[in-house]
Amino acid sequence: MSTPDTQRPRTGADILRTALRRNIGAMAGGTALMGLYQAGETAFPIALGLIVEHALRDRSAGALALSIGALAVIITTVSLSWRFGMRILQKANTTEAHRWRVRVAACGLKPVARDVDLKSGEVLTIATEDADQTADIIEVVPLLISSLVAVLVAAVALGLADLRLGLLVIVGTVAILSILSVMSKRIGTSTREQQARVARAGAKVADLITGLRPLHGFGGNHQAFLAYRSVSTEAKHQAVTVARVNGVYAGTALALNAILAAAVTLMAGWLAFVGRITIGELVMAVGLAQFIIEPLKLFSEMPKYVMIARASAERMALVLAAPPVTTPGTERPAPGGDLEVDGVRYGTLRRLKFQVSAGEFVAIAAYQPRVAADLAAVLAVRVPPDAYEGAVRISGRDLADLSVEAVREHLLVNPYDAEIFAGTLRSNIDPPGTSRTVSEAVEASMLTDVVALHREGLDYGVRDRGANLSGGQRQRLSLARALAADTDVLVLHDPTTAVDAVTEQLIARNVAKLRRGRTTVVITSSPALLDAADRVLVLDDGVVTAEDTHRNLLAGDEEYCLAVAR
Image: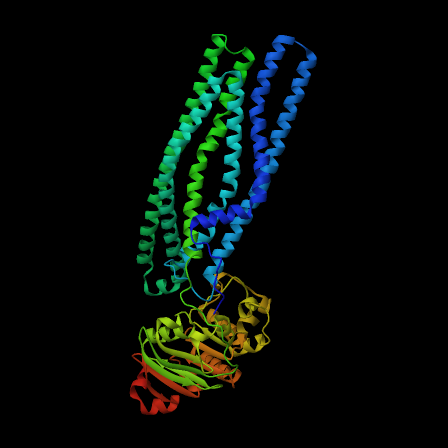
């Protein structure tokens, strides 16, 4: 049904390696510029020390002017290298995050679902927050290297003044990183759990938004709110835990960096006091001790960001590395064919068997709503063919042997709760903009009054989920979209439950007229649609128990009459 993704990253480490390899050029340029920035920052206290040394010794105005010029060059270099270095890295970071967002979203939108136990809200969180945090590795590595450059330049400069100062910086830096690397593991674990809980809260929000109207209908909004508050509270507690761990980490890093800077300053003061270094070298040492706190802070924070990026990459790998639920076929059905359900056993369906001939209009009256939902799910390929017994055939070919793309072109199942998207009436009816039957679909679905109600007509703006439309208008808009697709086989699931009886009667006649000669199946209990069909199949407890025209069934089947008569 689609080409298998042979380039799927298997682990979070694969994702990080791919991100780094794909941005090696930008990272090299950014590293060079950020290294130049850090070297310039380090050169500033060194230059001040040299200026003091020469000013005290030579007392020359020319030497002072030259020194000021050198400081101006250093400041300009620092400013420009930071500006352009961060521009390169942030552009690469943003671009890489976009690539992973698109890739995760593509996995969620593929016709063949992935075998991963995540809800749509969790996938949304992974495609946004986790993608951004994973792409941060593009900035982390260059900043890590540039901070290392600053520490090494400072250590070399201090070592030239006195070897003990240089060794103190190197030993202190190694000790600080060793301590913080142990603490960063706790951050990674806590962050991974926080991301999972936030994703679960996001999934709960998505579920609530989807079911908000029916929740209001039967008064379940309070219980739904309590359920969300429970999940959200868990995410809040974990966020507090992560913040506490991050606070301890940041405080420890700052304290250790300050201790090292104080140690360098005290040792330099003692060496100057005993005459081992000059006053200019003392100024340089004190300046470097103050400066070194910033790159050391940045350097010591890198393990934390690496652990966060790894945790996010591992969550993305859950989606990207998950295999498809089923192995798709490659064949295509013949155009204008029939639809056959042969001995399907799934959920509430019990060896269900029926056939709809090409060009026939058949209505299915399911006494149990769950039976109707299971049948619609099987026909819509939301259930993998290998997950149920029996077979579904289009034009004599098993659904399992067909590609999903071919099935979507040939067979459309329009659910009763179809989504309405932000845009216009026209973009909702004909998303690709290629349909030639938009006007006919609008008339058949009785959406003409909605179009006429607004001066913009079909270009009237629709809010997300059709928030500015009534329930009946949303349902007719969804029906118009299904009819405009003009597929060979159309399956409609309860397309008129939110419209009045008069409109329902008109829609039934219009659909039968518009779909004449095209295979059409309507799963419904609407008397108007049942009467418009060529024949009616009665589904009771997952099997076909009766088959005839609507009027004959009304006359001879008391149970059918009680089920569908209004």
